[in-house]
Image (tube, rainbow, N blue to C red; front, side, top):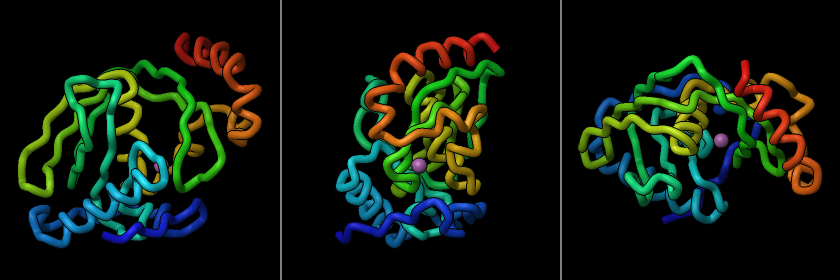
Length: 181
Ligand code: NI
């Protein structure tokens, strides 16, 4: 299984709406998912969407270690999602397609999403917390949206090297402000 090349911000594949997969159970989809999982682990990421590996299809893989209800890797094809609250909570995000940067992004703390696995099993989950954040980030990729486009304040789009030293205190204040909106 090859490690795939990851597209970086500016490549057109990251800015387009990805296409539905006509048959999620085709062997090619399983192979794509296996390669995406290997690429995600190799890159130290917690999620990866197919457009990030130059494949404009509605496929994503991710891990949600904070959520004991859904351990292991999730692979989802043709996801449909709904934000279940108007509330937004700001948290720091990074993206394998926006290397070495972090940004403070407001996200809905509760999301329902459905889809199918490459095995043809139905997924129907209502999730909160980090799990909700991760799926919003990954599913945005399928609509051609990168996290900086979701940010309220681009002053908080910063390099990881600076974030390590300067962000934690800033994030607390900023997160409180965002949560009060
Ligand atoms: Ni990303």
